[in-house]
Amino acid sequence: MKKLTYLFGCAATLAAIASFTTPALTVRAETQSLAECKSAYLCDFDTGTVVYRQNETERLPIASMCKIMTLLLSFEAVDDGALSYDEQIVISDRAAGMGGSQVFLDANLAYSAEQLMKSVAVCSANDSCVALAERIAGSEEAFVEKMNARARELGAENTLFANCTGLPREPQYSCAQDVSVMLRALLTHGKYYEFSKVWLEDFAHPDGRTTSMTNTNKLIRFYKGCDGGKTGYTAQAGFCLASTAKRGDTRLVSVVIGAESSDKRFSSAKKMFDYAFNAYESRIVLTGGAPLDGRIGIRGSTTKEIGIVPERNVTVFAEKGKTDGVTVEYRLPEQTVAPVCKGQEMGEAIVYRDGVEVGRTRLLAAEAAEKYSWWDALREGAANWN
Image (cartoon, rainbow, N blue to C red; front, side):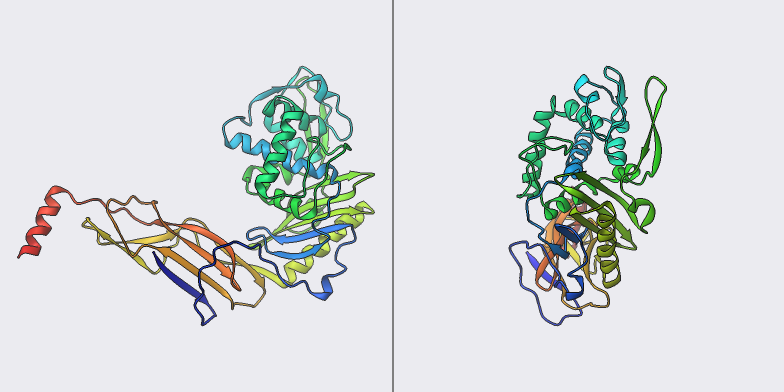
């Protein structure tokens, strides 16, 4: 394999790094009082780079923020073909009888999966959560097993779910760092933003009545760039908020657990966002679909070389104005044998910041290279003979 290193304002060559480490920035002294709560976490969405942390692995109740996982599994069920947005889900007596935040579903009536998912994202509907859980896994208990299994897959080691709603039940807990991991996974689903950005909307029932839904996340309306997140509150958990905001190419994820008031959870998130947007930025190092400078030689084809493109964008999150310490390692063969299809995987590129991996992407063939035909081989053989 050929290993090339593209240097971004740095003169040294970077050796390959075998293990991935979650990147982190030095927490400045002025950030120490950003969050008024028991636990907080702020990171870059694309790379997971940590900007601020406060008791981030402490196991605490998170109330309705556990619905982030309920929504994640619902979207993944759609991706897997196990559920469709327009599927009609008949509501059980148990789901209809859930207390707390709800849209007052009617037992034995049918609602679309999209309606139910939107009501969870917008107004934290407990009845819709249970209805989705029962449809996807057969029962809420079986769905909770899926929630815990998915948490383990995501590396959320300080998380344990006991239900799909976040209503008080022991034992269940999570931590600010794990909540950020779950929210980052949810944010990869584009359809989610159609729901999370709704501020006020009527929920239509099959019998003609409506329930008004108001987004529990006030930052959606009152903070520039905020387009998603999940609130939570119980007497035990206090006031909680996981949220995301995007400005330009920079998307941030913040988590607040155990604030003393609703105002303090929102003000803490805003302070963290303000600090990060002012001090840091995301820069695109590799652009998906944009040809790289190098080309790969082809044997066994009239096409002698092909171009290479990254599969997706890879960004670096760093202090504004800082351009050193970023490197890209390209892992590619010097040549390959035809046939090659356009879009075929040819290798990978790994992006590092200060020696720590912050992202990687597959490198794809930008064009096709057909294998020699019998006539092509004969003609080239004759040319070589002459």
